[in-house]
Image 1 (spheres, rainbow, N blue to C red):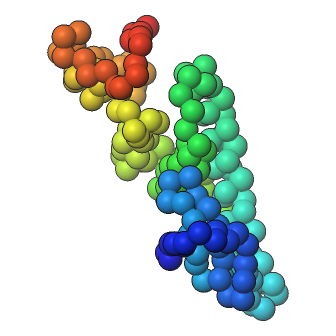
Image 2 (cartoon, rainbow, N blue to C red; image 1 turned 135 degrees about the vertical axis):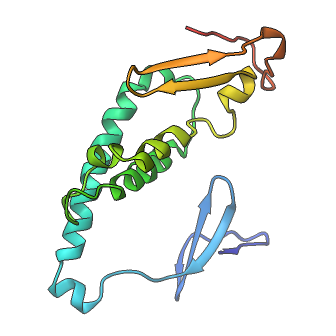
Length: 168
């Protein structure tokens, strides 16, 4: 990825270059590309399969995010949506029961790798809760219980600007 340097910042497409801005990396440029080939326009099977699977992942992500809404409104992360779509797409890829175009998140979560992907997901990558608490945790997927051990309030590493800590 090329980075734009200078006083003139471009946005849009010039020739075969796309110019755009990102929150973290700033102004970037990349070679234009993509689109559909003639074969893809004549035989849209793969495109329809991908769209179908993506739609199922998006619905699952929405339901998951809505269930967590009371907890997510406190901390804003402009990248959470994209990271969650990526997570559920990877979990869907673990589905070995259904054929391509019919894969979904549920069967992917039934695999050890699918569970591991969900366990490893960081909702707040810039602020790891367990590192802040300086404690050990174990989540039991069967009982859906989180067990926190070795918790000592003296060892809590509060992030800069933090004013409160609540455990419920």
